[in-house]
Structure formats: C-alpha cells, structure tokens
Length: 172
Image (cartoon, rainbow, N blue to C red; front, side, top):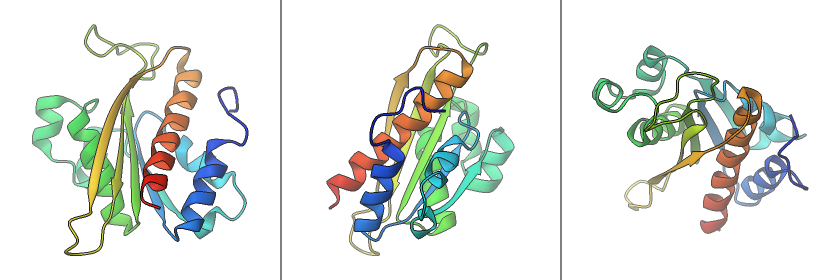
C-alpha cells in the first residue's frame, strides 16, 4: 500500500510531529476501513502517540461509537462535511486524545452520484484545546480521487494524514 507514498512517508512525518509536540491521535474511519490506523502503526514506536482507530462503517456505528447525531446522518448522509466533523470530534473526545482525524466517503466502484461521485471524501481533523481556552477546533475538507477502490482508499488515508500533519504543524 505504497503506490501514493512520498519519501519520507506522511505516516512517519506525522509520528515525528506528534512526538515533538507530545500529542496523541485517534482516527474515525469509514471508507478507509482501518487503513489510517494501519499506516500509523507501520511506524515503529507509534504507540507513543497513536491511541486507536474506530472503523465506523455503518450509520449505527457512527451513531453509537462516535455520537454522530441522527439528524446529520438523515439530512446530510454519511458522506458529508457535518458527519466528518462530528466523527473527528467524537473519536477525539471518546479516546481523550489531542487530535482526532476522520474519513467518510465513497471508495467505489459503485455508490457515486452526480453530486458525490466515486472518489469523493470528507476528511475531518479535530484539535483538543485546554479547558476554557477556546482553542478546540475542527476543520473539514472535501476531496475527489480517481482510481480503483484500493487506490482511492490509499489516497484518502494519505490525504487524511497530510491534513493532520498540516494541522499539527500549525499548532507548534
């Protein structure tokens, strides 16, 4: 799973940045099915900063494991910015980590629409500020990737880690 890897791979750069800032991360994955967690744990010593990856593929899993609200799922659908936002916050808060990262999208080969074609994903990144600081925040970005299902999943996972790395570096 290195077709889209850079050198050094983003998972190593994320690990270095998290170690340097003494931060931790958890992932909430839908369309990537655990790939973010797999990439992070490919790095020796990742237990210093990686807590967990929750694979919340179904609506019910998003609702019960991450407290994504029913209204967002009903009104927007699982592949949406509001759901990605709630997934990132939910996994951050459930795990008690500094950072939460989420993915929800359409890996294909079916399931796409004109509005949300195959390859569409929303990536959420949530930060936990100190209580009372007002620094807690979450951002969501939409992307579209091309390729077969495996290629799309890798691109999504690597983009999620790239977004996480950028957010961590902004907080240094």
